[in-house]
Amino acid sequence: MIIDFHACPSTDLLSIRNKLSLIKVMRAVLQPIDALPLLHILPNEFFTELSIEDPHSALLWGKYIERLTSLWSPRMYDNMKVWYEASTNDYDFFIPFASINPALGAKYVHEKLSELDNLGVQGIVVSPTLQLFDPVKAKAFRPILEYVERKDLLLVMHLDPCPRDVGICFKNLMPDALSEVLDRYSIRMVLSALGISESMIYPWLERITRLMKRYDKVYIETSGISCILFNTLIGRNAVKSIGAERILYGGGYPFLRFRQVIKNLNCVESSELSKRDLEAVLYDNAFDLLRDMGVSIDDEKIEEQKVI
Image (cartoon, rainbow, N blue to C red; front, side, top):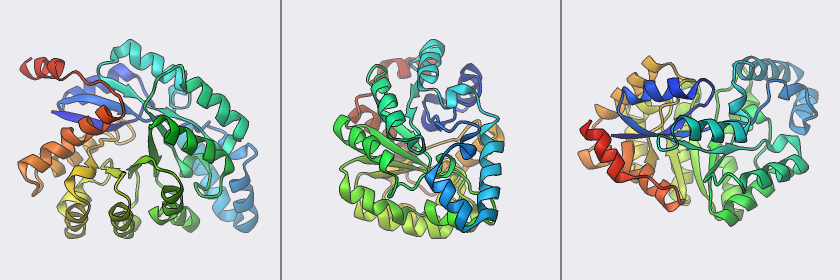
């Protein structure tokens, strides 16, 4: 049985559930991203500075964001909508997280944080790449960090793919930059690797290993990198160094096509992990973490589903 720590609520949720159920997913964490399709043309300090320093990179990055986010359902950036639809389609299957865009300013952030008080979600997802903000310098990100710390929520750092030839994007995705955040705030953080390109995955893994060895409340979920993580020498060394107990299985559907999800899952299941570690990555780690965050998962119902 599997807990998928990364499903994208960008399409019909019933369709997502039906697909994931085929590979024995019992629960799926929904990771929305509050990035409006036209974010890059709104006032944005990060993007303005980039446009001055490197207009070509800014153009490529802006077009990339517009192309990707224009395909999304509103539930990707509407916390009320994704929460309601997850509840309607089966709250026992979906675990909806929320997302807030720090690039839209402190007033917007505070309004969205107040909204979350009524939803009872246990995790907030941010994406420096698609929301265009610097996690260290952005002042409007600080209220989110303070809220996560005060409420003891999870913070998911969603590290999305970068457009090609935009070096500054790669630099900002490197996990070294998160050290200052983790030094200042006592929070639990999950790093999503969905979309990390092959050209940067190996230096990224080296850095993530150092980060996770220094901070014991940091986890990594495997969406998009399962085959590299479990079936290459450098990936297996990273797993050994990090410890299987801090790795969460993530499928990344439907951003990743279903056949890609199956391929990545096969890489996990056919890896050299012991049976105990395999069960930990696919289910136990997520179960324990979510339980600690106050998310109720009914083991008895899962046992019934296994029998069926």
